[in-house]
Image (cartoon, rainbow, N blue to C red):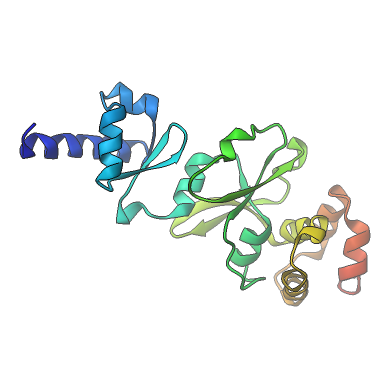
Length: 206
């Protein structure tokens, strides 16, 4: 294969990746006659990278947003916990992994990723979309919990959070004039953290 043919094939493969949002499965690549050896050559050339078993991402400076990749890998997930705290500026600690809520019935193997790093939280299906809203990260729309649900989750998992991060999150939420106490109370009841909410945020619950 001469240089012109290589360039043409590369352009066709890139076009296919673009049509799939930058992420393709092995079966999709095979369907356009791109096989194991071709995939390995793309990886060696720095044009593609393995995300998880059977999933590959095209490496492009215009497509380097992890948020976009998270959307494609977990369209049913909801950003929560430390990721949401950082998004709402309730924490200045940059999470080293994406915190995502998914149904407790979700398969565990889907989180065996080489990249990006993900911390899943398994939630009852009936509660998964409680407090769901839409945010924007790097120009990508994302499913994320609102401020009130985020703090309720922080209360639920407070024993797993750094004490300083926890304290700052509560303080920042309390000082946030845009918060809804009514919504917070409703979520706290539904998530069974009303006692913790009253003990830690109680003075501002009126």
